[in-house]
Length: 82
Figure 1 (tube, rainbow, N blue to C red):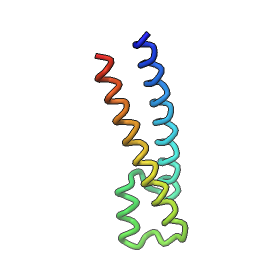
Figure 2 (figure 1 turned 45 degrees about the horizontal axis):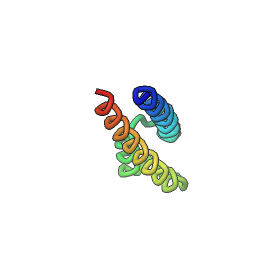
Figure 3 (figure 1 turned 90 degrees about the vertical axis):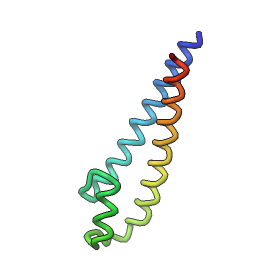
């Protein structure tokens, strides 16, 4: 029974991770970049001056925090399944 619960939790976390990564990639695509670092570099160079960038950066931070939390949970689940 424990293995079933672990597998279900893993499935839910993987689905949530996929959704978060998709949302993050949509924001990055909006600015023509593939990574957060690339976006920050473009901002620093003054290539991006759009007014909504602040809200998007805040959203990116939240998405990245949630991605990291889910990755941590997945690592813990993988350890427990050994």
